[in-house]
Image 1 (spheres, rainbow over the protein chains, first blue to last red):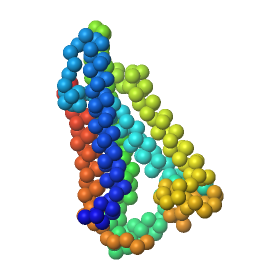
Image 2: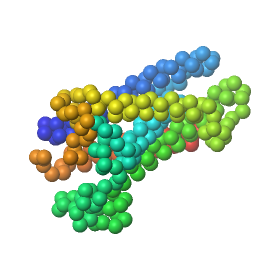
Image 3: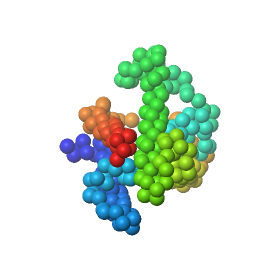
Image 4: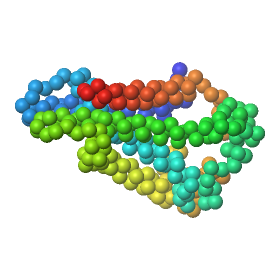
Length: 225
Length: 36
């Protein structure tokens, strides 16, 4: 049991703080929502009505989409772009998807390689891009969720101010939709860019996200050696 | 690199996170479509 927890500690740690943060967001969001309702002379709602409302879910979705876009772009960009000296990057000259031999695909697979890597053909091609496909799909679905939830919230506000309701197409062209979207994107891109550049010169002893403390600044990914 | 084979814990972690995404996305899409 102890080994099982230690073997999966990284996933379990993020699972625990994800749940805590989501619960915290729901409590803070609930209080803020009820304060706004009272300001507009409307009765407060109960906690679970808030949790199952677009008011809460649009805020969750707008953060999900930007995080998954961040990882989608990071995974895709690191195929083709390199940053000399960054452990987040392959070495200069290694750009591109790599050969079947490098990637242990088809006849180059090992006996313990995943079945769809050994099998070749379309299944190996699909499996070879499965991380990017899944992260991209989650990004698109959460961005869709953000647009649907944002539309409901905007139309609730419009109704309070006797303004006409928007259609979904009108909403995805609106300043509200793009403000929610881009305020999240800019911070993700800033953090990734900073991580790539800072990891050339800075170190965290013991972290897989860092080069070894004594590795020279010009050395890129250790794993691609 | 010394390590054991695939464990049940690895599969559980994969499916826990996949489940969170599936349920989360389904809820976040369904609730606004229901007009709530």
